Length: 145
Image (tube, rainbow, N blue to C red; front, side, top):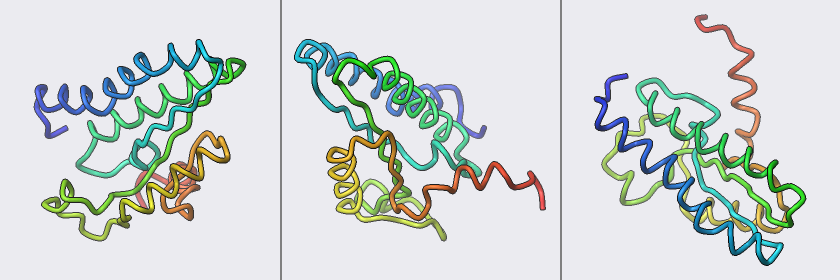
């Protein structure tokens, strides 16, 4: 909770409101055609919280919840929604951020996951895939060891 209110609002504006705005713009045409597929690239932080990133994780959790809720709402419409949840991605944007021991991915890994989800129609996919159960496993652990 170290972020001030302005930084918190900016985080939600990009990470949640950006997804919401994108859906508002993309869905009407898809619904009119009776087909389409929105794939939101969110973050594994939506499932696995990271200390020091509470507002970031909350904004990603909100984006994931929105994606899954709208997926259910549109289940019979021919329009699909999916989420890709990568760990930290090695880009110029993340170059100045100390990632410590975090598992990181190349942008190409995320692109391959987007293509796989587009083909399969899966609701969700983590990058890397072996972390798919990380959120569930985390929920089984005690707060403190």
